[in-house]
Length: 135
Image (tube, rainbow, N blue to C red; front, side, top):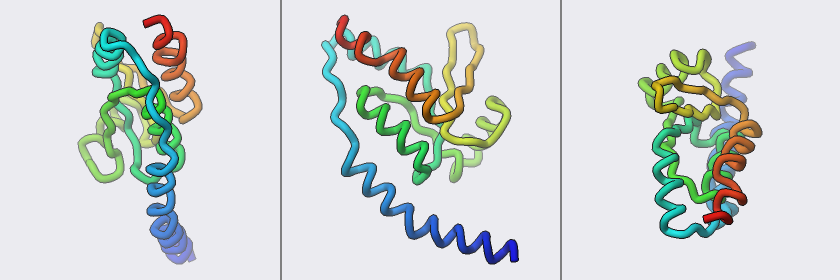
């Protein structure tokens, strides 16, 4: 019975994945405008960030849309198909759960932030409206 349930959900995922990905492409917002200096500062800050995600996960799509809206260049790491990224997520973050934002600090300490709402709030606080309007 468990095998039947597993294959049912795999089938649902196969059907819904293309729909979710198409929806993401069609509804991704345009990026905020920044001055060249502010853009360079934001791009530099984004080199310390990496998003561990699954391509068709709805919560990952939600975070990627916020990344696009804020105009951020954050490295996306596929934790489903790339075993090295999956292992790094489990070792560093403590569990294989996506989305997860790795925030590297200059002292070498990494912070692992889970949950799409928490990630979006952190991104908005760090790179949101007050940040780009001041530039």
